Length: 127
Image 1: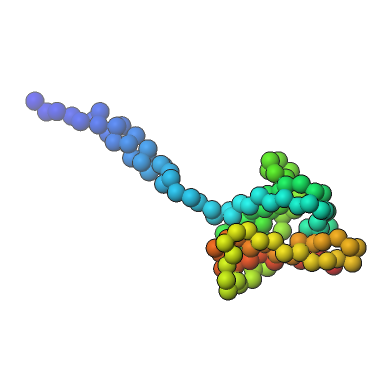
Image 2: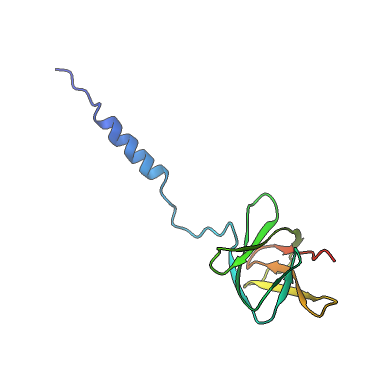
């Protein structure tokens, strides 16, 4: 009597799919998502002034230095910006933002440093 194992093919296919698409359960910070708060209005690229509050900044992809600035719940995009990359000799151990004084007396976002990364994202205000 010849036995067929055709019932095993769907089971093996299902198991392969389950293991092939399973998460590795390790931190994946490819987007470098950072939540930050400001206690005074700041100017971001695109001539947008962010009022006092909390925001999210994150990288959109890994092939170009494009970042997005959103509200804290990530339901509103304030800016999508092509930045300049700057090499960092001593990467910070926490997120760091730098600002520059603008002629109007308001602070403008100048750069964003992500912890442990050797590159920083530099912004231009267009002025």
